[in-house]
Image (cartoon, rainbow, N blue to C red):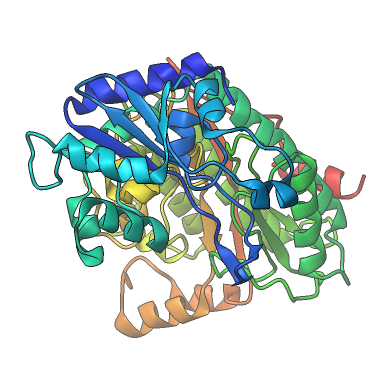
Length: 466
């Protein structure tokens, strides 16, 4: 945990921003894997972590905006629990460690809510909560507040959502330090896997190595590892292929620290450790787009504009290879380049690898000024809003030769004036490439976070053959 004053200040700011009523922030519960006593690894809710910092299951935090008091409600462990877990701190002791003086049982919470006279239906005396993403939390809220299970998301508090986004979007120095810890572990994950990426090995060997390195850093992977020689599938979690010469291997993986701050890194390497001419050509185009995004990222620019700047670099590179044709401005304006990158440039990152997207991705990545595009590719950009110092975002351009998508566009004549489909036929066996860094928006620009992970052609070849 951070020092307790950090959590006290965060809660004070949240109460001030929301203004009135009570705020309910649920922690997560244990989730059974295949029978009740065999649970998945416990992951605390990120909002609860941000405002209360406690890792125990079944906790509920309440902030009373009117009285200025904070509460934590949970049942203490009993002797049956202690037999299996050993001595554990009481709820009161946990609460005190993060500056909360008031505690009670879950039965006390029910009485507190009933006595408070606050209601989800009364905007002048509101109960504020976030949209639950777990069925057990949704059910708990419904019972607590006396509303139907299906109606729970409908009454989620937009003032609370926007207040959380506003506060959590700006990362403090201590948060940046945690993210860089996660990137330091990701360095070991990626460099080690690069050296293993030789013909005859299987994807699952490298994916397993990465998961082991993550736990050596005292946390799990931050999302299921993407490790594939079929990088044309954007999120390919099949790890059963044997590595073969001539294939590019996409490795998209990150980890969490013990405090659950994340990293998210992608590197694409040639199996065997040497780029051939085709691989080098496509890789350099994607790397140039990654570097262009870093060059232009700064406070005041929208990430939509950064996405477009990177897209122009991609389109220019494809023109030089004869894959695209025509005026560069027209190519980008019509989204012809998106055939080869049907996703956005990046997303927010922090306590979640897609930070805060449980609040609704549009509430995190967009605002009243900047709205999502309807254009293929650009419409999948998860963060398009104007950048501010303290934002941590991913920069992850890619190139994917997706045979089914190429065939569909050719059959439908989509952007046929700008795409040389005959030339594209030669690339349908290529696979894909993605390069991803985690970057911090600074006062006058940005910086790539963490220890530099090999990224240029020369660096990758030297690392793989060292």
